[in-house]
Amino acid sequence: MNVQLLERITFNPEQCGGKPCIRGMRIRVTDVLELLAAGLTPEQIVTEELPDLEADDITACLLYAVTKVNHPVLQAA
Image (tube, rainbow, N blue to C red; front, side, top):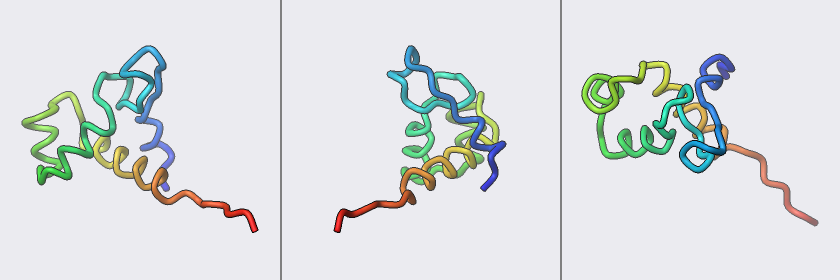
């Protein structure tokens, strides 16, 4: 996993309710994921929808989502 990409994801309790954002901007990881889920390509997102983003920001959002979904679940015996 590319740790440098994940460093693009920031948390600030006084910004966007503490939700994970991209590089301190008010663009939440979920905003990017919703655009991808709606069928937009990463190129469309960075050129048309959120021009302040870079291609690596999109990748960072996907990596962040993977780390949240793919966490170990411990069950009591």
